[in-house]
Length: 354
Image 1: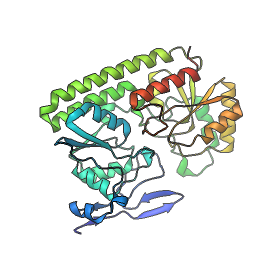
Image 2: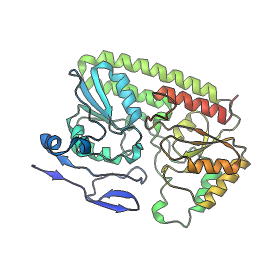
Image 3: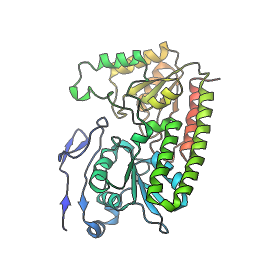
Image 4: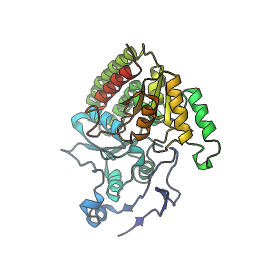
């Protein structure tokens, strides 16, 4: 083999941290990240057994169409809808895997270098950021700049709940002090921002395949119309909510809250696998009771145990509010649009919104 670049790993409290200094950490610390192994072309495919190296499934060139790799599901959804029959799209994040926690196999990394375009969100998946920088800097589309990430973590959270968390965390280890800092990356929970990304995707695909430009723009226009209709439904459905504060499993819903005049209280911050202390849980139970909150929301890819405990102690219901980072069998819909409408139905029942 001509070259190998392997990242040394340190296992510390369940986290895998690359020591080569090349892994961006702009997203809040998560379990995860990276072993990026770069192997020259055919040696990757011949040197790794299919059971070990296939990973998420690298896009294959279908009938001559462009191969597109998306970092995670919402980007895969948009790329597939806009690209239509002229592209073959697959996601680097396998079903059931928490998108933040993605690790890449050598085959995944090789596929990133071989694909025609990688669609990703910088700072959301450090493994993808690193591989794109090394393998696909000239064949990638970073959607964050197009989406306009303008919601800071905690910006649309209830002030009292934030103060409670800050007081409870005041004496904890400094490594956890920044859990609520930074920009909320979950822009796709505002359909209007996802519509902007659809238009940007059409522009980028037109650069890649000029002959398909009109088809891409027509496809994008059709998707934008559907997203605008969804936005109108959500605006109308949530305007009459009796309770405008949502208690959620973690603070992934800043864009949804900003768009539809809601407040979120996260059991955890932007890091959903952080568990609250006993004191924080007691404060949340009191908060739910005092605010006459009817429902505590949990998500599909994270254990509902803490949310269920708080809801049981407060005597309220639980319901799913899906951040739509990926599809699984338990998802309340088969695509982004269906799941967003299921979220709307759950919010209307849980807030409630007559």
